[in-house]
Length: 174
Image 1: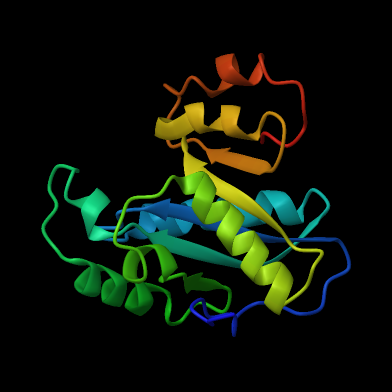
Image 2 (image 1 turned 90 degrees about the vertical axis):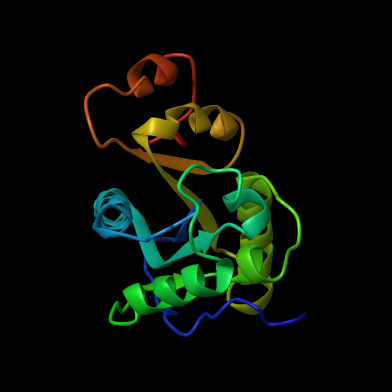
């Protein structure tokens, strides 16, 4: 019941299947590539039968971020930079839950489940989450083999996405 995730940028009117985009990561720093990845996913989905109500970046907490190379800014500075980066977007937001309210590392699938339950409770029970990730994490696609929707935005041609996609028998892996 605690309101931790802003939803002021989410569209409330839709005429197709309503979805909200989510991506997770360190975002140290958040950059144009992250923004472009979300924009490309939105464009694809809206051209293929979905209404994208909004999108979230979910920065990881410091416990996880400190395990990564080049960690150099704490969660407060990272989240501040993320909020600043999307402040002029009419559809992108930051979900601070994972970064500010957890003192342990969680799997991205837990972040997906939590956001979906949160939005279904507070906004609309018809909303589904679409998890967005780059080609360097194309193996994430296996998590959407039986449930959920995942969209891989490939940054280069060296991704294993096509090989992985051959083994998955549903249309929820995009």
